[in-house]
Length: 470
Image (cartoon, rainbow, N blue to C red; front, side):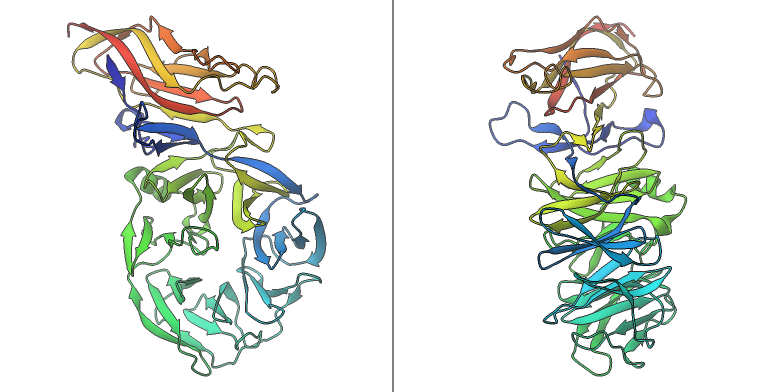
């Protein structure tokens, strides 16, 4: 028997022949002791629709304030309660992604920054308003630290409000000389001010008029305003961002530690507009996921628990449709890139809204170069009997896996054959393909796809090989 190698991290390679296999909407999860295989490849969580805001095309940003979710869709601000009843609170200018922060006042002040339009006040029960204090220059992001609002300015200045207030002194700022300011983030009780060359770290010194004290420099900048995530409440508390050099870093103490693979870095370096990269986070089945998207081009996900990467693609897209995640009402929510829909990220849901969520695993090369060998039988170890008697027929009652293979290194795959994954109770189902022909010196890759909305658990494949002369 010859084992078919499947990757733990997606590795498409610069060219298909150089790759180690791909995981698209699939990730590897380590099994416990006693399992028949050390790893199971599962499907990423689905997107269960919770609300739909009519006549809007995308979620720009959201924040939970007490028991109310404030969400900015297109040019309107909405509030939603735990039953996802939405109330239109009024107009807010712009169309770009926003950052939102709230302070510790008895009735929290809520500030929203649109880099193209400026700063706004948001409210849980009334319409948005323009930020009134003209001492604040046009910012490109906002965060909060110990009751102070902190803003980044494109010219390298960092501004602070009064304590639990929306007033700003003309002298309440510091300057990072020679830096183009791109983003402020509050993390571990400090402010991290990222620019195009480095990051300045500040702490609360309660001084006046500027309350922050600069501590030191982290020698890595950021690719764009929204290319960072990991401080969000409810996540795993690990700051991860795309540096100005288009590598992905996590903060280890105060050291930027690279975690991106060559494949991830190729994608980042190939993006048309690095400043528009968008990072987000969510939790799913105990897995802390950090996601980076170049809208319309790609989405990669990093599993903080395993250290592995996978690709994610929505149906008919090259990227993932979800954006602007937030934890609210004890679940993780995400917006949609092209509609006013709001989703719950749900590992028990096997679709993205009404669209298929296509699990795809491509193997590495099976080869014995320069020898050739026959493959009279190939077996794939799937969790079977995953159909549901009362499900949608046939995609849930009698689900299948599509199997295809490539003999030219992954450039071209043949027409797939389908094999059943087992209706409810059919636990003896075997996923087997017979008489698949001769594997030549260049080797063979296998592609497995499941588009039916059922549980996917894959634990490897084997070829009953017959050796042939070179």
